[in-house]
Image (cartoon, rainbow, N blue to C red):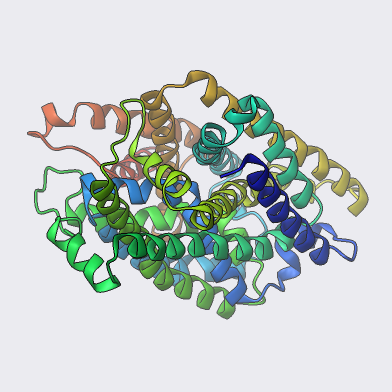
Amino acid sequence: MSPYLILFSFLLYTSLIFLISRLTVRKKVNNEAYFLGNRNSPWYVVAYGMIGATLSGVTFMSVPGLVKDEQFSYMVLVFGYIAGYTVISRVLLPMYYKMNLTSIYTYLEKRFGFASYKTGSFYFIISRLIGTSFRMFLVVIVLQRFVFDAWGIPLGVTVTLFMVLIFLYTYRGGIKTIVWTDTLQTTFMVTAVILSVVLISRQLGMGFGDLVSEAGDRGFTHLFVLDYTDPRFFLKQFFAGMFITIVMTGLDQDMMQKNLSCRNLRDAQKNVMTFGFVLVPINLLFLFLGAVLWIYAGEVGLTLGPDQTSDELFPTIALNYLGVAAGLAFFFGLISAAYSSADGTLTALTTVFCIDFLGLRRKPGMTEERIQKIRYKVHIAFAVLVMLIIMGYGAINDEALISKLFTIAGYTYGPLLGLYFVGLYTKWEPKDKYVPIVALLSPMLSYLLSVFSEQLLAGYQFGFEILLVNGLFTIIGLMIIRK
C-alpha cells in the first residue's frame, strides 16, 4: 500500500471522528453532559458502541493470532461473560442508579469510609493507565512498523499525534461524544474482520463451509481443555470470564460511565444484556478469522520471523498479501482500535479524578465554569501521562516485560472485587483506615502464589482465575480488620 494512500485514509477517518464530535457538541456541553451525557444516551447505541470499546486492539490482533496454540478455548471465557453481565444487570446497575452515582466508587465511601473510597478510585486509575497504555501501544507499534517507519517518523511523534487527536475530540464532549464515536469504531472493526475473511476465502478458492471444515480438520476449533492443571481448563475459563466481566465492566468506571449515561435503569439493563449476548458471535468471528489466517499462512508458506509474535499475523497478511481493499479495511479497523482504547479511558480517568480525588462537586462555591476549567486541565494531564507510558513501553522494547506489566493490571481489580463483595453481601464493618493495607497486600500475595503454584499445588498453574484468589485474599483481610 502506498504511504500516501494510508495517510489519506487516516485523515479521512479522523475527519469522520471530528465530525461526530462536532455534531454532539453543537451546543455548549455542561459538566453533567461530559460526565454522564445528561443520562440521555439511547441504550442500543451504547450497547453497539461498547463492542468496540471492549474488543480494543488486543482482541483485534491478539485473538486471531492465538488460535494456532490455543484453538477456540477462548470462547469458554466468552461464555462466562454472559454470567458476569447478568450479575451486573441484576446487582450492580440497580445499586448505581438507586444511589444516582457519577463515579461508581462513591459507593465505597458510603459503605466503608473515605480511605476505602480513595483506594477503589486509585486502583481504577492504575488499572486503566497500565491497561489502556498497553492496548494503545500494541496498535501504535504495528502502525509504526508497517507504515510510519517507511517515512522515518519516530515512535514518539506517532504516539503524540494519536494522543493529541484523541484529546481534541473528547475534551469538550466527554461521554456525550464517546457514545457515538464508539459506534463508528465498532463498525469499522467488525467490517475489517468480515472483509478479510471474504477476501481470503476468494484467494483460496474456498467457500465458507469449506473454511469451517478445514479449520475443524486442522484442530483449530477445539473448544474445551479438560486438563485441570492447564491455565485454560474450561471451568477455570468460564468462571474467570464471569468475574473478569464483573470487575472489568461492572466495577470499571470507563465501562459503567457509558451505562450510566442511559435514560433509566431499564434501558441500562437492556444495554448490558444485549451487549453480553452480542459479544459471543463477535468473538467467535475473531477466532474464525484467526483460523482462516493460519490456513492462509500455511497455503502461501508464510512464517513469522523470530522477532515477530502471533499478534503480527493479521497485519502481515492484510497489508502484504490481500491487496488494497483488505489493507484499507485492516488500517481502518486498527485506527478504530487505537481510538477506542483511549478515548473512553481519558473521559473516565478525568471523571474519577475530578469527582473522587479533587471532590469538585463537594467544594462550596465551585461554579460550573470553574469545574469545567479544572476538568480541561485534568484531561490534558491524563492524555500526557498515557502518552509518556506508551513511549516507555517503546523504550523498553521487551515483549516479556511488557506482558508482565499488562498482567500486573489484572491484579489491581482483585481488591475492587473483594471490597464490593463484602459491601454487598456481608454486614461487616472493616476499619476503614486499614483497608488500603489490605488492598496492597492482596495482589502481592496473589502474585507470590501464582509464581510458586506449581511447587505448592502439585503442578497447578494459575490462569485468569488468579483474580478470584486476589479477591478472596481481600475478603479475608477485610474480615480480619472488621470492627
